[in-house]
Length: 187
Image (cartoon, rainbow, N blue to C red; front, side, top):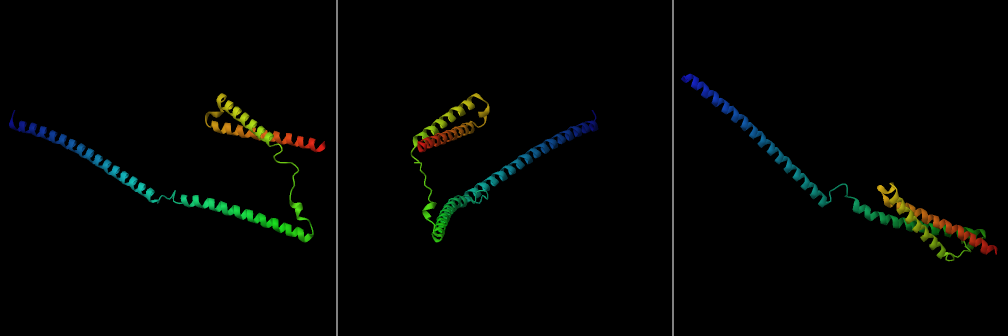
């Protein structure tokens, strides 16, 4: 082989090797750049999370900033409202009594007198209420266990059947008590 041919082959091999190292170095640089970019993104994310955590600890979270204020003011407003309602009720009753006295009427007519003793049928009322509640629990648990109604919220079905049957027990009590009152006043 002649010297120029050898030089050409050597130049070709060297240029290929240089091209390969250039490609490899470019890939290394890209890999390094992407690793560096990922590092920067991770550190920015961590810094952001730390700032959010500090804001939450300091109470700068706008979503929950007013929660203690609201939690304190609601009961205070409810108590003040109840006092105002009771005061206004007493004032109106007093004004009505004064107006009746001025007109010459007897203010004792305002008092509603019930001939029925509230404790007269208390055991029957409690018994029918407890019976209705027991039936409601039984029917509710049967509905939950035997049908597909209770797949998502079985407690709603049991509670609603409990309330339904308890109310029915109180209605039955009212009907029976009224019949007993009629028979006792008629006899």
